[in-house]
Every structure is written in C-alpha cells, then in structure tokens.
Length: 246
Image (cartoon, rainbow, N blue to C red; front, side, top):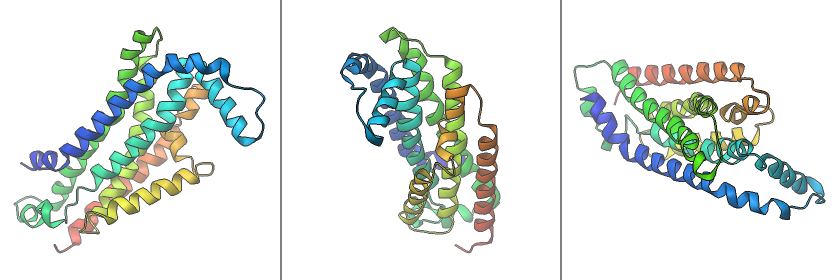
C-alpha cells in the first residue's frame, strides 16, 4: 500500500517529466540536420566572449556526438532532470493533503515510510535519466547518424547520481516545511546558485559527464562526492521525520 500511495502522489510529475524529456530528445535529434545546414553561415571572425562561445558551440555541433553533448546532456537534459528531481522530491510527507496523519498512524516505522517514499521517487528519477538518453541511439539512424548506447548510459547514470542530490535535498526540505511552496523554491534557488558557481563547484559538469565526453574519463571523484551528499541528505530527512511530531 505504501508503494502504491507513493506512486499515486508522484505519478503526474513523473509522467509529465518523462513526456517532456522524450519530446526534447526527439526534437534535438531531428534538429541536427538543420544545424548542419547552418554551419557555413557561422562567421569565424566574431570577437569577444560571445563570438568565442558561438565558435565553440559551432565546433561541437560539427559532429553528432558533440552536438548531443552540448545541446542535450550539458544543457536540456541536465536542466529538466534537475527541475523534476526537485518536483519529485517535494511530494511532502507533512502536507495535510498528503495524508501524513493517516500514514504515520499505520503500523509501520517512520524509517520505512521515508525509505518507500524516497525509493519510489529515485526509481522514477532513474527512468527520467536513462530512458530519454537511451532513446538517442535508437533515433540517430533515422538521420543517418550513430550514437553509442554505452555513452548514453554513462551520461544517464552520471546525471542520475547528481540529480539525486537535488532530489534528496528537496525531500529533506519537505520533512521540514509542511507547505508545498518553500521546498521547491529553496531547492531551485540552490540549483541556480550551484550553476552560477560551476567553475568552482563543478556539480553540473559532473552531471553532464564533461570529462567523459572530452577525455573519456569518468568523473569518479565527483560521482562519489555526489553519492555521499545524497546519502547524507536522505539520512537527515529520515532522522528529521523520526523525531518530528505531526
């Protein structure tokens, strides 16, 4: 029953997120032939930082692998997955409409309640990370391109591990605040702050597996750090709910 209730409370966020990510991956793949046609029109003489960024983006887009990483894994997939990780994590256990009083009156421990809710959301997040990514190798032959399923899997796993940090942070906030607004707003603000400091705290570079794309090296240090932070946030949420009166 707990698993089913957790699914009912998160299913629309999950299904909407999955639909958006699948559509985004589809559009990205079938946009690539048009991008190739525009390549000769890009000037190499532009100056300044903007011109440099345009040239870098154009160089990446000259290969399908580079285009997929720059447009999808580095940007759209990471941003949308972070957003829906936060939304999935804020299915509050304390919100009155979430039935917290009823759930906490059941003959199950609060630790099990937290574990079921967190596991359900993380399973949904894993699908959001992997399924759209694995769609790219399937769609690529339709535009006479190829993309390795192994590379898509690596990027999807890296995205999931880092997105789990935002999920568990939002989940922790949902055990602190009973309203539906503060947890996603605080978690979203934290995600934006991290994106602005990515040069110094490379959360999103680990999420997009930039080192794997550029050098073929997995970001093991970043993945281990993200996994440890996600676990710590989960245990903090479990401890907070265990000692809280609802």
